[in-house]
Image 1 (tube, rainbow, N blue to C red):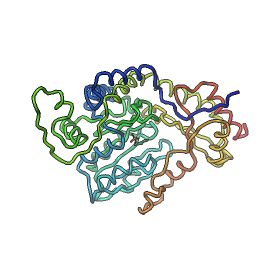
Image 2: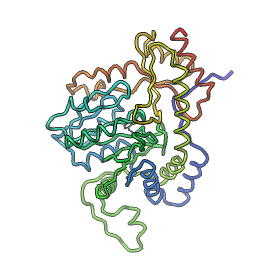
Image 3: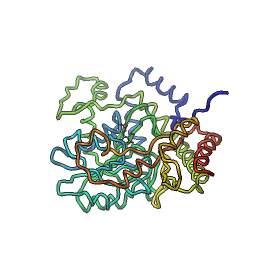
Image 4: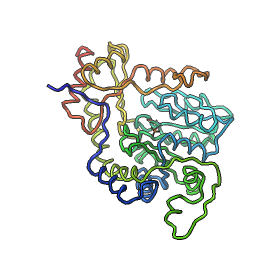
Length: 379
Ligand SMILES: Cc1ncc(COP(=O)(O)O)c(C=O)c1O
């Protein structure tokens, strides 16, 4: 009998992606070119934004977002500690200071109140995360940011397909940053995107991702006449390749199906775990829908075993679950900062775990995961 192994996430990559990547290779155009342009257009359309700027990762997208806002030394940027560490790191890349705010228990997201609690006269921007795909309250946060004259950058790394107030996350965002890492619902291997509506910022972002050049390498190459480019400011090489974009275009076509499937799996977990005392599952907020990029459950003492004991038991049963989302302020990279206590963040990161959700998860697999949890709860 083969040993059962249930991974926490498996990217949905098929023959179509392999073919699209091969076509890009055969075309001879493998760096940033026409497929990247098409992927930008189609992705922006999907998330309800006017413009897309494809980059090498969500981390570089966040970095560029802060650059285009001219944020730098002396500025403070409010971020949730309850996020992958790249959210806070991006602030340090531009020489500004990240200031950690707490999150609410039900969504794992910043709120107007938690932002207000750490706002100072030096605050220039907020990076709010749609954590694990759960949308934050875009109406409340966008309106507060306007009132306070702060730029609101949306870290939508996990949120492709999620909605808020009946619109895709991304629609109406000043700047939204996306990830196409293989743990995400849409993948290009590595990759990211900024979406926005401002055409002038788009021009500058395209320049910043490509060494500060005023003509893209693709346009220069395509021109019959010699084009003399100029380097208008110090930029980076944050480009996506056409091979990645070719894969991304196929993945975009899969998004509605993957979204529906993830939500069906999550609903089944919610049903099968509903009666376990001391265990709550992540859910849609009242104003939107999550893509369940991360399906987390939160334990309290009534459950019995601790989170780490549950993780160990699941691992023994062949289930690759994960600890909950990290608290950046507890990592060695940030211990030089004086951070007030963030009780909700600390509770979530200590007591939650992420269960497997992916297209290849069968009902039988899911029953196995649920069976381990029910046994641990004595049910
Ligand atoms: C909330 C959040 N922001 C940023 C990132 C970084 O994304 P990337 O790996 O594309 O740089 C991640 C990755 O997991 C994330 O979850």
